[in-house]
Length: 258
Image (cartoon, rainbow, N blue to C red):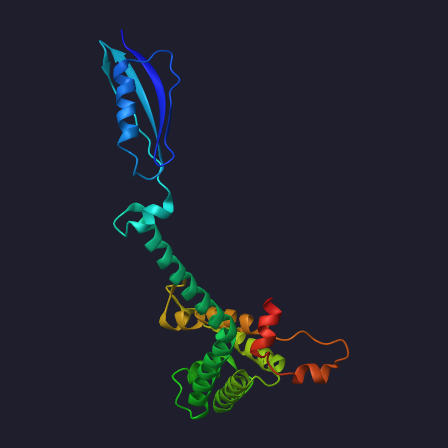
């Protein structure tokens, strides 16, 4: 007949052995005593044994050992806790890097976006003003109220003005008003020239021109991000002063976000 009995033994400098069992064998007591005697210099641990008695044979079935985390960290990177400590250091370094990147992005992200949009608009507008733009003919087609050259020149000038306004940040509300008007106007190509925008009339199969127009959704979204950084109007501010107000500075953007 096999009968299991649970024992709990504490080893270490303050070792104590506490046995509470329905029955114990001399071999079990001898085994525990030897462990207590040989663990004088070991760190504080706790071990739980399950003993079974079958023909007077001691069977250790399970053992659980607890060692202080600080001590295991001292053992070096080869241990599981040592590896945990190294991972913690790496995590802290990554956290500091992440915080730095996010701080820089919050401080300079909108400014960088404004400058990038401004460069694109000045570049595209300058090509139209110089009459070397590859989309001059298309622009002339969707602005029928003006002659071909006047239409291209007008759109080019507007784009240059918008680009300068975005970079400098002066009168940012007026600048963004022109920006959104010009960007939304580009989508008329999809309506007025569907044969040039879609392959076989399929609205999901864009041509090169169709892709050129649809990508303006990204520019429109970028404009919304810039618009979201505009300082709130003051209570005593009239319309003229409001329209002349420049784009928000870095500190104002941070305060607005906070």
